[in-house]
Image (cartoon, rainbow, N blue to C red; front, side, top):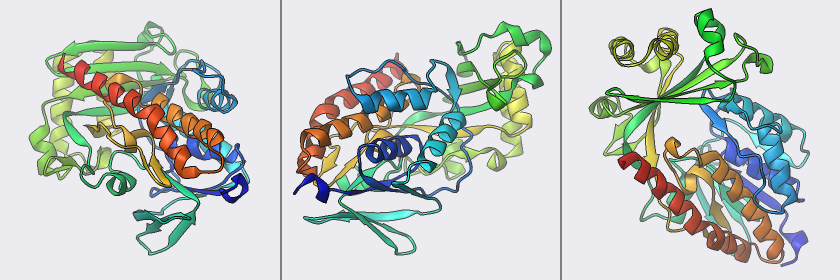
Length: 359
């Protein structure tokens, strides 16, 4: 098969990893359809620091790292990076991004790969990349014997608050892009200072992101349907958190965190601007089969404690592009090469997260 015949890619999942994969493929000459189950609203997640230094001599890697990081090494809100990638995708004539498209199955034959939505619409391409997160449909196809990520035994409360809502005397106590770590009987709390609305970086203009790792509510997650048979089904969003649980979190925060951290959490709890996300882990034994491969959390779900998830997703995307360049006449050989290069690396990253959690 000539390179010109390998023209169109389907990407299942339009979060950060899927957007980066789409940009990498489009800028390498492919047309791309990205299928995202959620609507177009920006995600209210936690914070990310992207490593800005390229690891390989790759033009596409430099482009993606510069775009995702905006050329700096700041800690940033998930939503800020998502918006920047979305804007870049919108400018790419070779990319079609479809929201509200829930994929229920994928498949392939000798000449194509496809994804089918719950409305029974089929999207066909020359190959397919799964970037559909820890509950990946693509993973269920690639590895039916090990389809689900494992619940790690704790959840993380994540979100961000406007610094201007905090006491003014605390504004200068935190430095932009610094992360702060605290441990107590209530778990582990990480906070970070990020550029705020409109990119404001002066004290009082910034966002304060937080991640509260909580081991004390496993039974509750089952009762609320977040866990079913030990498998995470979804996150717990602010509007769905029972009032009594918010009160419990408020009391726990007040009792166990310092005044500055407690002030952050009290605002988040009062405004219900928090998400309770069950932490999941998945150690892969496969990344590709034929014309279908997976990247990011779909391929290797790891604890946010590693700080490696987003960076690994970018490395996955870059490795796929490098592998396609190495095998331009065979997408199956290219995706097999991607697996060869990345499988051991990402397995070790997940294992590192497990080691840190247990120690």
